[in-house]
Length: 141
Image 1 (cartoon, helix red, strand yellow):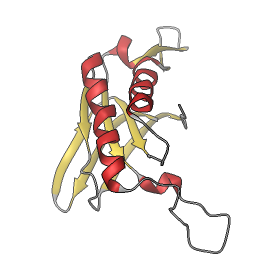
Image 2: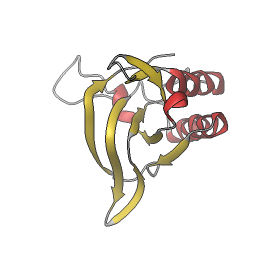
Image 3: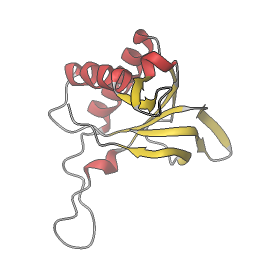
Image 4: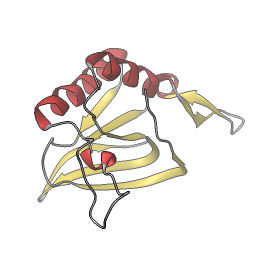
């Protein structure tokens, strides 16, 4: 999860997702992830206090600030680099398992009230962002 002042995803020449101030979330799915994990992740993302309040203290959540979220699937988060010189991706879930869970995170965020943009699952995406902070967190649920 990154706090951004803006972010966008393009596929080829097409912008497929774009936000102003908010959070860019790269979502990786592994074999034991479930719809319950997706719901818990969405709740954590929506309520995590990573934005500054009037005193400059990170005390404001996406829910409080009405900021936007850009969700991008990212299987390479589960790349294993412990052996050799090429990452292995056996810890990443297969697309048929991962795509519905990424979609579930997006759906749950929207049900919580978030304005959500997305990348395109399985596409060769270019992600552009301007960090705000920078604040970058790795979140496991």
